Length: 87
Image (cartoon, rainbow, N blue to C red; front, side, top):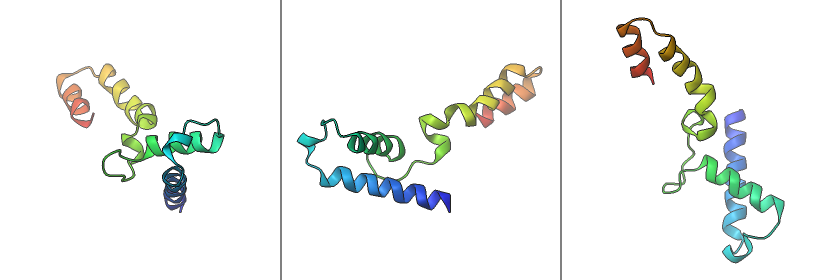
């Protein structure tokens, strides 16, 4: 599935980064910078586990945007409390 292929890409990028000496990571190689960007965005820095898409910064607008709009559009206290709970 697509999730497994993405996780495999992340693992490949992480292996590229771990096999490259740290003093060479700041070079201009596009693959290394792309690997660094993807690993930093997709893996938890302490546990190295994949962060689910809704909890990444790139998932904020698509996942929380509709909830925020619903909170602003709420006309009663119960609906506002419901959307606050969902958020």
